[in-house]
Figure 1 (cartoon, rainbow, N blue to C red):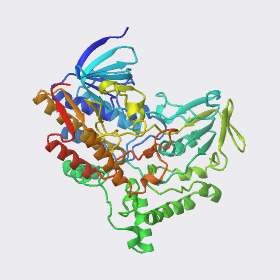
Figure 2 (cartoon, rainbow, N blue to C red; figure 1 turned 90 degrees about the vertical axis):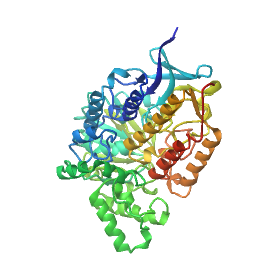
Figure 3 (tube, rainbow, N blue to C red; figure 1 turned 60 degrees about the horizontal axis):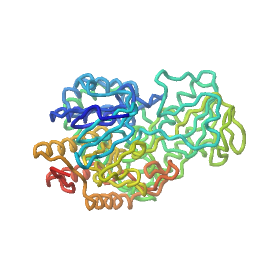
Figure 4 (tube, rainbow, N blue to C red; figure 1 turned 45 degrees about the vertical axis):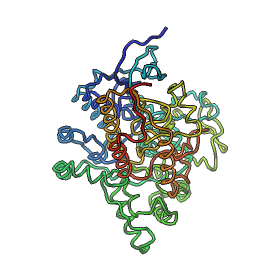
Length: 536
């Protein structure tokens, strides 16, 4: 029979970048904290996603912590866009530098979290059958942490090796002399396909929906640029924080159709040469005006025609949704890879998968005999990790039932009916996935730490978002999303990749600076929208 073994001031679920910084801040408040982590090491998404080519699509000098000037100055990145092994080394360096491991319990998945109204504590059950108790529960579970496996007939029957990009073997995979099939062409596929193709005897790419990808133009980090940024790191970060995505770069306000065709082409060409996500910053209305967006679409399609030598393959690779309304991919030689003789594109729109059989994948057209299948099929984004835990708030209210028609939060950080529960940079209603994740994490952690510190100073034991504040925030999230092109596309932003998941645009698209100002205003007004009390 399980029992509560230990009691803490706070329990944090997850030891990725969110969990590490949350632990550091709560320790600074003098609290007893335990981090529970399912893996056997820190790093979160960079611990699990070890597929070939795994790399961040935000430049290294920006995708890093800023809470410690010393940390920022002492760490030196090797490339413009850091690869998974280096980011994982960075996470481990942070854990060691701030002596965080002693409060992290590894190989421990959280299975349940029930709030006790009498004591204002959370009872947290784990995979080994033990229970822990804490006043505060912080979910640092990540927005892209729950791997999605497609429901394909016969999936379990395949006799060869199977892999998911989000749960890659830590020892790596050798595809030499193997016939490999990869299902999906999202970000992880775009990064891994060029490298798997170099190794495999033959690679069959089973494409469900074509994706937009722009070149990374990755290279060793320019040391002069690094010195320049580090000379004014705080100013660099402050400038980034004033952009809609919290990424330092050139984000134009000029409408695309206000300039000549020649000027548009020049701007797009310049962005293509620069590489990276700032392609979407070429003009100010690309995610607002469908006609403007079409000009950005046409440019990428023309690039695909120029790169891919076989016209039929090039046409099959061309997306037909608004660029940017699915996560824009950043690649190294993705489209070029389809010129290789050992790569075959299988267009599932024309020849859908009928079933997986022991020897491979059968489409409506033919059987593809395979030695290995890679599922690059993404994640149950933003809500998936929370849905898989039996979370029950006040009066036994189940979070999964509360969110059955779609998730609702206040600021993406808390949800009404679930006292003393916080979410970091993954909660629906926060800018998380539409911003630079680590600064967004830090902003959330700082806000949550300020709340907990405020409660400690006033000897308060319970905090809960009000239904009215939550409804107002949900309405605002929907209001700012409605004029954009985002809700028009079936993406994981709206849960379209998960059968049965409510179709609701989950992130906050109002912009990082607007969101931060809202949080600052809430804090300045004694945490307006929350009810704080000493007793239940």
